[in-house]
Image (cartoon, rainbow, N blue to C red; front, side, top):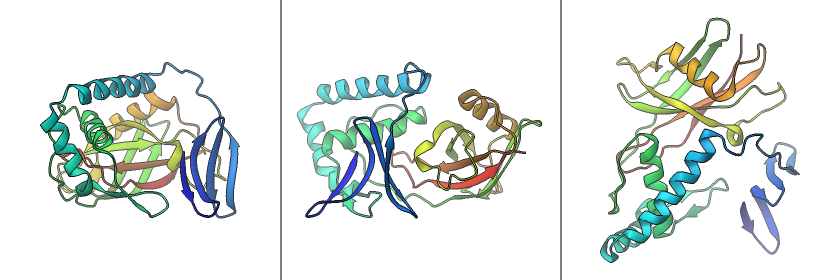
Length: 228
């Protein structure tokens, strides 16, 4: 749950108890949280496993290694959804960067790294052909670079934003010309493995982000697509 405090609460975003707080063009809203049908899904089990791994890993660090994370926190400040600059604790920074590295299959780092500039890439259009088992992702990408691909399941046409409904469906390497991402058939196969068969005529959101060697994650570039 992300809350911005004023003389009273002025903004809220995320989960609290059995409710989800959000805001849109029509103002702030709250609705009942729907629970996942399968609390033992592969994604949820991976999240729990990584949390346990990095919590234990933090305990096992030497004092000098932990000090490196404390000292590095100001180098990795970030902007939240309200536009406020926030700084993580040393432990949270260790967990955050190593979680991102794990997505790429990289090893755990015990000493805080230096920040590295993240080049901007964007997805401009996505074409999904359910009958043809195709998910074509086009845009302006850094060539020959691995990107994380996220997507939503089939949504109704009235949904304007899929940011809080995305799941990681896989990784894709940008082509040498930097215009397309991953293999079209593999992208769709990965999507289907997470969400099942795409529903014709429904709307989905597909996005990408990159992770560098320091474990920093770029902002997500996302577009909507209609399943045809």
